[in-house]
Amino acid sequence: MSRILAAEELAEAAQRAEEVDLGRAWQERSHRFRTGGKQVVVSLRLDPARRDDLLATALAVVTEAPEPDGRLRLDLTFQDRRHAEWAVWQAASGAEVLSPEWLRHAVRDRAAAIAERHVE
Image (cartoon, rainbow, N blue to C red; front, top):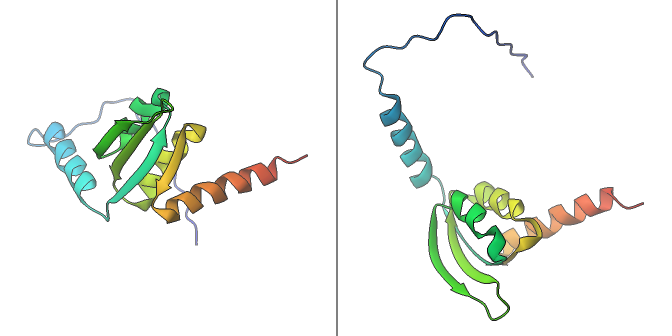
């Protein structure tokens, strides 16, 4: 069952109680997000040009080392499986997942499905 939601922009500014500390609320929710769930460690080889983007979304860098071909070898922690798959997909062809195996398969299967839709 789907519901249709609607929103209307009001002319007047929103009001909130003085005791609401938005900065603290953001910090608390951010901490809960980053420490909850079933975190995933991903090992990958990465084009250095994609490093900053990927590290901006990872929870932590476990290890980082240069590879002989100029790429980076990284072990990164992500919030959960969904977060890991999304983040690696953002790196596009700049990333090669080494482990976990389920993520290698997910990236491969998604790329294959997209390629299949674009075959002439």
